[in-house]
Length: 75
Image (cartoon, rainbow, N blue to C red; front, side):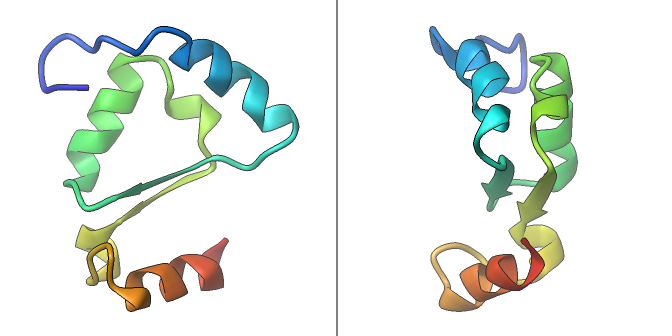
């Protein structure tokens, strides 16, 4: 997804609609959290995810083990 019009991969919405029945969904990103939220809202995907974990707020970036340790402690 870019900063302009949000174009989803074919089948992405269907996957996001079906997975919550059996899986918990999260966003994990090194991107700017506010930008990611805007993109998710624009693409109508925001409501399918429980939480967004961004390196901006965690203060560690992927692929740092500290980033993933934080995720494991908060999921």
